[in-house]
Image (cartoon, rainbow, N blue to C red; front, side):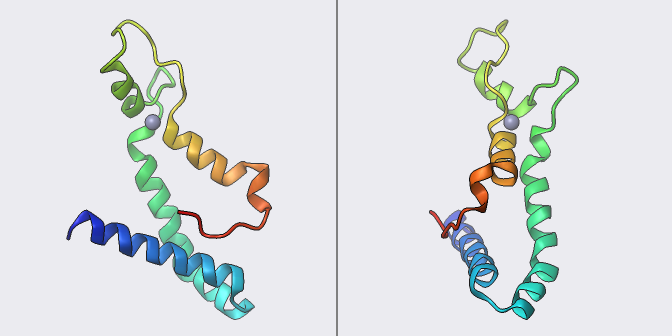
Amino acid sequence: MFLSEINESVRQRLDDVARIVNDGDDHAVTEVARSEVPHLVGAVWALLAEHQPNELGECPACSRGMWRWQRPWRRPTSPCKAYLSAWRALFDEARDEPRHASH
Ligand SMILES: [Zn+2]
């Protein structure tokens, strides 16, 4: 399977879930919550797996990327982008405002 096909099917699934949650009746929302939320949670955990903080409290994946171009003795100065994105999506105050599928 090519990446473009995977990309398309993931986008399609996320769009479907968002559309049902935004516009579906309560029964449809309950159904999609039961069937899809576990998969969404699993997807987030899978994406964050390699970003778990190490014993220094740093992300080994993002630190490694930064060390390619920074002097090796310098610590990364910005936090893990994957966790920042997840945190913003889960806790950002603006998340409760109506939003449409954005690409
Ligand atoms: Zn990271």
